[in-house]
Length: 261
Ligand code: NDP
Ligand code: 8X3
Image 1 (cartoon, helix red, strand yellow):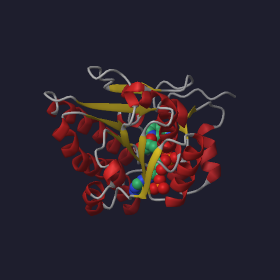
Image 2: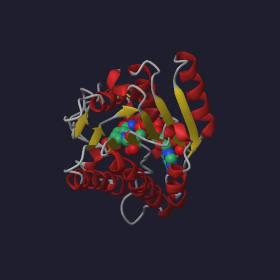
Image 3: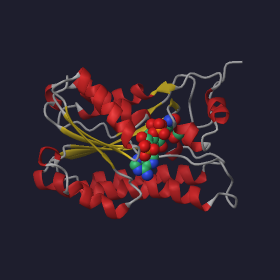
Image 4: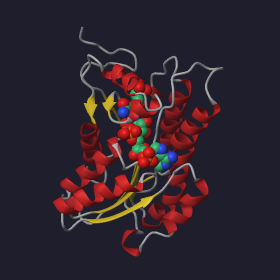
């Protein structure tokens, strides 16, 4: 809790799943002694999360705001326009991301390709570009990029999503090397199967298709990943949990998943 005291933490995609759970985990680990910038496109979801955290932790400071990471021109103004109490960001959690569909190359819709690349890759890069000057100015700050097992173990029907997460991995590696003479840390967390809105989004709202992904398996909860993120951030300054691959126990690769009969 001491290491989190008063930190300013910006989370993208905080309206559901891993992002929301990460906000809750930080609030709880810091016992409310923290400042959270909660962003996503669904403002009402952020407002609910903010209300619930404020009830539980009366001392917490929250700035929640609509931020679509695919609207690249809006990102720098958003960061430079943050209220004074939230401007000096300490931790950036690049979490917003998605898979769209499972189509084969040649049949993938243009909007799915754009949606994945614009969010997972260009959104994450633009967020990082906007925040890194703040970190460089004070020679500290942490960036957590949410990759995926999909960025290490590509699978058929996942070409664009897997490529997008491989891009996250190599962007993260390059950045860590660029920052070698600074105190800025770059952490990458690569989840396996986590039960969130991920599959519902992937299958464009088809609940049956989403449920089928997890049938007979026991996926992780978003809070399991949130715990790993907060663990990484609360290590002492000289320790970088550079990469973490986190599976539920029935999973050993993107496709090697045990399904109970
Ligand atoms: P969810 O769908 O539950 O959450 C995704 C979040 O991203 C939502 O808050 C959503 O908010 C936000 N988001 C989507 N598009 C945008 C956008 N254009 N701008 C800003 N925010 C956006 O899924 P997860 O929590 O599972 O996903 C979080 C991350 O974890 C993603 O990067 C995903 O690829 C990764 N991941 C997930 C795994 C899983 O099995 N669930 C496994 C490995 C990695 P809103 O719609 O309100 O904008
Ligand atoms: C989500 C996990 O394997 O469905 O990143 O792509 S997978």
